[in-house]
Picture 1 (cartoon, helix red, strand yellow):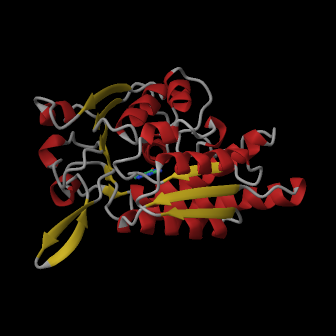
Picture 2 (picture 1 turned 90 degrees about the vertical axis):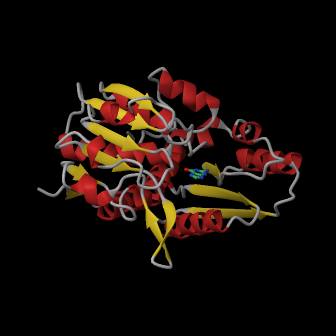
Picture 3 (picture 1 turned 180 degrees about the vertical axis):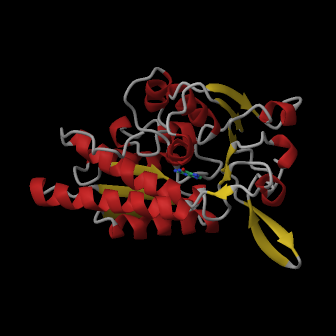
Amino acid sequence: MSAHLIDGKAFAARLREKVAASVAILKAEQGIVPGLAAVLVGNDPASAVYVRNKGVQTVAAGMATFEHKLPAQTAEVELLALIAQLNADPAVHGILVQLPLPPHIDADAVINAINPAKDVDGFHVTNVGLLATGQRSMIPCTPLGCLMLPREHFGNLAGRKAVVVGRSNIVGKPMAQLLLRESCTVTIAHSRTENLAAICRQADILVAAVGRAEMITGDFIKPGAVVIDVGINQIEWEDRVRLVGDVQRDSAAGIAGALTPVPGGVGPMTIACLLANTLTACCRISGLEDPEGLAA
Ligand code: GUN
C-alpha cells in the first residue's frame, strides 16, 4: 500500500484563510492592522525568494509588511540599530531577521536584541526557554507547521514514539520540545547517531530535518508511521536541478502510513505559521486574547 501524501499546500492555504479572516475582524472591531517587518542582509538568492514570498503572503492576509534590505557589508551595530527602531515602532508586531546572516555578524546577538514579544520566529533565548519550560511563548514556524500535520492524522499524539532527526535551533530542537509537550516519547537523533535506521524504525512519528538529500530510506521507517520531511535539497538529476527532501520518497511511500511530499509538504506551512504567529504577537501586544485555533 502506498502512503497517504499529506497535502501541506492545501493545509497551509486553509490556515492562511483563517488568519486572514481573523485579521479582518481585528481591523473592523479594533482598528488594528498586524504588521510584520522582514530584514534581509546580503544577496543570498534563496533568502531573497523566501523574504519576497513572505511579503506577498503577508499582504494577501491583510497585514502590513515592512521590508528592510541591507547590503552584505552592513555592520552589526547598524543592524542592531534597525532592530531597536523596529522594537520601538508600534506598527510593527513581528520582526523576522532572515538567516543565515553574513559571517561577520553575530546572529545570536541580533536575534536576542529583538523584543521577545515581537520575535515571530521564536528564536530569542527567552522564547526558547519559555517553550522548554512549558510556558506561553512564540513558537518557531517550521516546527509549528510540522506539528499540525501528524496532529491532523493521529488526533491526540500522547504516548506516541517520535524521532526527530536533526538538532538545529530552527527545527530539530524546538520540534522535539513541541512533541514532548504533546506527551510523545521523544528521541533526538542526528547525522552522528549510531544505529540511526533502527532508532528511526521505532518511530510512530518520524521528522527528518537533517539536511541530507534522501538520507532516510524505506528501511528507516516503521510500517504505518507518519513521516514529516523538512529537507529541501537541490540535486542534479538528468542534467537538471531537482528539489528533494531528506526522505527518499519512493522507498518511504511503500512503508509509511502518511508522508509529506517535497515540495508541497512542510514548506508552505512555514509561511502560513509565520502569519499566524504575527497575528498572535499582535493580539498579545494589544492586550487581546490569542486568536482561537491558531496557536500550537
Ligand atoms: N532561514 C531558514 N529558515 C528560517 C526561518 O524559519 N526563519 C528565519 N528568520 N530564517 C530562516
